[in-house]
Length: 171
Image (tube, rainbow, N blue to C red; front, side, top):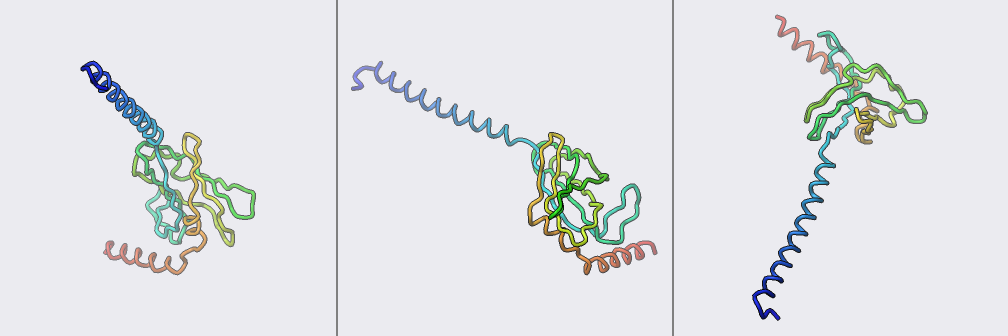
């Protein structure tokens, strides 16, 4: 079958070109996948913050307030423009004047935005972050449950510890 050197050379070149084609297809797929995934990604955390700073002052609030922490977990900068809040059994979407938004987040940077909303007996259905491209990022159900139960029992202890620490530093 492989009787002459030209037959051996033709088979070797066919195998080499086949391997080169497979490698080229793999590299093209890898490049496209990498480029599509190479963008900013946001992680949303909903929680109650006890000692958050009042915007524009050096004073701290004395009660537990709901806050949204938005972290850029991607490799590219992303601008967070606004936050929407939907409440269960209501068709309203709540907007408020944001303290720290819009904000450009570099990779691994975060911003904390206080929620100026009293939940009372209402439960949040959805927290949505909107970035500069118009993409909507939603908080997970687990994070939404953090906004349901207000940590009343923890608030006075932490506030008194902060006040004691400030008094100790002042004297």
